[in-house]
Each structure stands twice: as C-alpha cells, then as structure tokens.
Length: 380
Image (cartoon, rainbow, N blue to C red; front, side, top):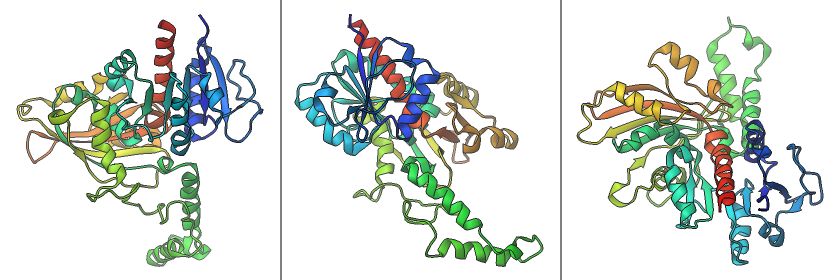
C-alpha cells in the first residue's frame, strides 16, 4: 500500500508552530506518511526540518496539489478555509480535512474533535464516511477536558462559566500588544518609584499612561494590561457574544447531546492580561437525584476521566502553586481546583479550571486527530 499523503497548511503561524512542535515531541513524523508543506507566500521555498524528506513548499491555493493529499491539516485560519475548502470538495476531493479554524465547526457533516471526550463520536464519524474534523473553540475544549467526567456520568443539568481568557486566543499580534501595554504602563517618573512617595500619585501616573493617546490599543481596542475586556467576538441577537454562544452550541455538539439531552451552558467571556492560558470560574447545577453524590465521587469522576485533568486540593497553598496560567502555560495539564458544594444547596457545585489555549485549546486535538485519521486511512 502507498504511504498516505498529508498536506500541512499554516504550519508557520502560532497554532501551526505549536502543532509541529508537538508532533516532533511525540515523534509523530516517524510514522509512515508523506508530508507536503503548503505556503501562501513562499512557493518553492524549503519546508521545516521534521526529520523526514519533504518537497519544496507548494502553493496553498492550488486545488490540484491539495487534491493529491489523503489528509489536509489546516492551521491557516477561517478565511483560508472558507475560500479553499468548498473549491476542493467541489472538485470531488474525498480526503480528510482537519482544521483548527472555526469556519466548518457547526456544519452538519463536520465533527468537532476532542478525542478524550468524544472518541466514540469520532469513530462513528469515520465509519459513516464523514470527512471534515474540526478543532473546537478553545474555552469549550478546555472546559470539557477538565469537567468531562461529570458530563460522562450524566450528572450535569446546566453550567455557567465565567471566563478569564488569554491574549493568545486573539492572535500573535495581540500577545505582543499586551506586553507592549505592560511596558507602557510601567513608565513612570523616577521620583515616583521610591516606595516613600505617595501611592496615589503613583497610581495617577499609571492611570494617565493607560489613558494616553499613544498607549498601544490597535489590536484590542482598549487597555488590557492592568485592566480587562468583558467582550470577546461579535454580538449575537440575544445579548450574548459569539464566544458565549459557542459554549452551549459546541460543547453539546462535541458530546453529541441533542434536543432535550442538550445541557444549557452560558456565562460571560472576559479577556484578561494572561498570555496563553484560559481560566474559567464554573458553577454547575447537578441533576435532581444527585444530592448524595459525595465530593470524593465528584473528584474521582473528574480526575479519572482522562490523564490530563487533575484535581487540585482546595487549599491556598495548592491553589497558588498549581492553579494559575503562570504554572500551566506550555503544559497539557488541565487542573480543576476550588472544588466545593455551594451554599445554594447540595446540587450546586463550583470549581476553577485552567488550560493552555494553544495546546488542548487548539493544536493538540488536531495533532491527535491526524494520528487517528492516519490509522484509519491505513486500515481501509
């Protein structure tokens, strides 16, 4: 049998770079497949060093070249998908399209991939001939990686998630702008840095830095450093933002919960001054009949669901050392802490969870789906 052909698009961008880095770390390129790297800007250039031969870079808009692939992996963004995917399918291409962008997520013939939570849905999709496998919204994926065990047990009546979302979710330029803002904030007259001078004068200097006309806000449209922005994505008719709408729509699609089985999920999505980890403060209403489920059972369901979710003891010490963007950044761990029943009653559970937006939030589900798709292609 011929080695499957895999085309990579958008491998130089932020999510794509993380994907390639992870594939190298897990030795995914050592598997039997032919890698072709596509480009939107450097046709004929040299592809990345991945320990396997690859041809010179190919035009990412060439439908003919894309159509020669068994699997295309795109981290090139939604505009690219919207332009190229319909043309490629229109030419009769029946390969697997794996994508980190949101464009195709909610299509009936696409599956949102998060295999530790929906392996059975993915397997069924492969059996049914579904060809589009799309990474989910970062916040949704991270919530399900942390709390998948509670959904799997069928204990969840509804969820509200208040988010603390990182700059990386908005893009590379936004991450740079956040740090530029931090630098601009810190520029205060030398005499005010003396701890004996008035803190109110110091604070006024900071506030005036943030209000100044040359404070860098081109990407975010407002100060993020030393502040926050309680609005992500565009407005929906019902007062939600699109990011807030995705919570319920995508989580239920991932878990294949339809109609009356769908779990209501809503909350406020907030951008904060973290670089690449999203956090969420979550309230869960458990279903009637779950009153007597003990915290031990709840913790076991969470930590036993997958190898990355990790219950953090509800102490100050463990919270500070294990439950923050600073600690989790660049790791695959999804800690769930501050877990307790609320004073509203035995059916109300609260917790706080953190996860890396670029790993489980973006690149990792796509990396794992590539391995699943490769195994499937080789077995058929």
